Length: 64
Image (cartoon, rainbow, N blue to C red; front, side):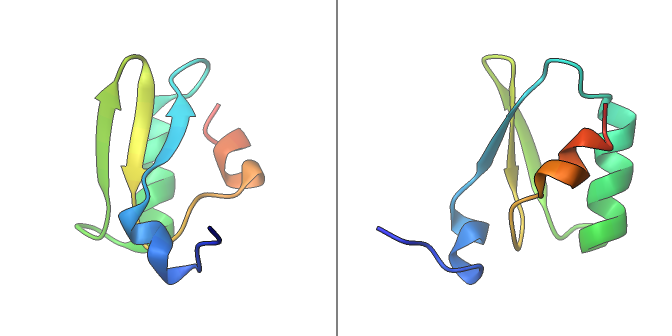
C-alpha cells in the first residue's frame, strides 16, 4: 500500500533514539511544522513522530 504525503500524519515515523539530540529534534520539528502540529512518543528507544509528513534523511541527520 502506497501512502501519500497527507496520510503520513496517520503513520508515525520511527527514528531510533541512537545519536539523536532531543533538543535538536524538537527545534527541527518546531521549525518545519510549527508548534502543536506534531506529536512525539518514545517507545522502546524509538522516537515515534506523528506529523504532516515524515522527516527526510537530511533533516534527521541534522538532529545528531
